Image (tube, rainbow, N blue to C red; front, side, top):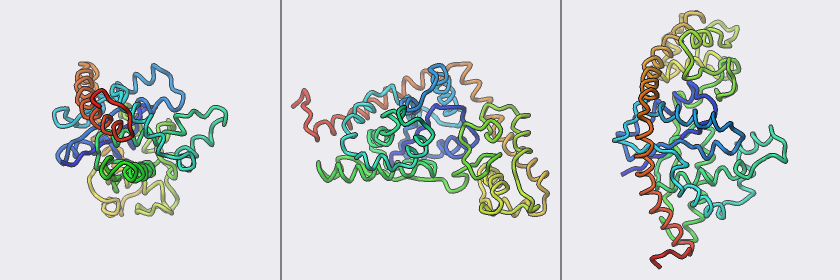
Length: 330
């Protein structure tokens, strides 16, 4: 059976971009394979984060997973930090990716460029090793990711080739990235050339925003002077971004959405986008609040950790034996 694995870092407030690019699609995978969805809380430590924020974000993310339609009877939902094999495999695999490779990773270059060079942690530099460990622990065949994460899957594939060449074919399973084409990259409403990224209060639609705030942000979204609703990401990035949002939530293409609104003014078009977003998020947020109030996410995470540990430990033992670490059964 195909194994599918994905996760989200509990850093900052989740946005509409996270919902469209990941949360909304996770439930579809339940019918097509064995699914592992985790909260990447160890990854969240690679940059400074307030402990209370990390705890709250992790709790919210667990509830968001369940509110989006993930069924713990059909998939495994767990905290990364609850499965010690992630850190243990990371300690082994860090020897099979090289500093030159890691220093060329786009995410590291982008984030480190904004920081004092003396304050860049090893965890940020070696982020791809831990992500590779996440993927490889569960023998994942498919890794749903955003476009900005495909490079991490590619370096994981390089690691698999290198490791298997040394220790034997199929010692580690080769994964492949899967990117959703429609709505794969939702951009900021205020700067439509930049990704919606949890850090722009005016340009981001947060999943916990109320209806009034959502509508105000969309109605204030940057557009252009062309005056025509058409899908042209290069020349009309703002309108094209709104078309991407509408299309993703309507399960149509951006071109089909553009055809629907070709005779509409920008104001009417924005109102339609706002209506679609609110229609989608209102029941989602109601389910989220019910889960938070009942604390039902706690039992789900505990059960998920037990299931994940059972599988991850087998992979870890296989790798430990391959590299020559002495086990009690040797």
